[in-house]
Length: 238
Image (cartoon, rainbow, N blue to C red; front, top):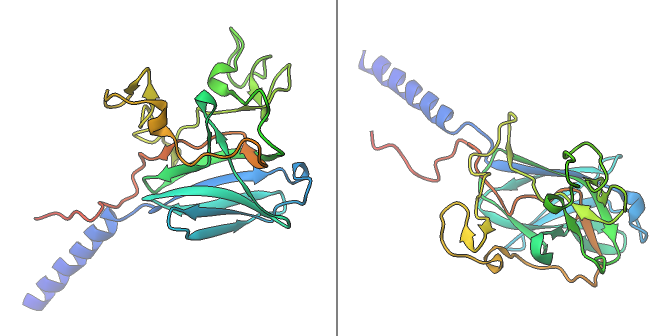
């Protein structure tokens, strides 16, 4: 009888542990490389390199698509790998920043970068950021003059980037910490109210005079807010 009770308790414990650890400990970053824009040779892969130098590679599909599963708790930079070497994937931000890095703070997140295109160098006039690119009265997604569509401002063709990407969680829900997660607005952290500056948000920067690959959409500075089923080492004392 005691053996049967012990086995039943063990089975229930295992089930509880399995339930609490459900979810994906990794997050997904995906996109499609526009091979024809790379004059010196089409990339064959997109690699993610973390702060330790560890590298994960995703070979491009026939349509140029790639998908990277990235572990949380690391800062990553992406590079397009081609026959002539590597080209950094760069994320233009407000204030003229050209970031090369982002952080992954939770698993079970999905970030779509859209189409990634080659630039010989950053445009002299910079990149227009989506939040400032819509003409008065237009709605995002309408294709109206002044809107950022496929990496260009409708009506002018000026290069632009969608910098309003929010973390999406597996299953389609939005990340809990998407809104104002570490963003500096008007000199204050939009989440905590603590004093900050744009410099506080800066990661590794790209050289504007060098070749770079620019996606339609930036990832958040910090990919966070999804339930990945992990409790970061904490346990229930009961």
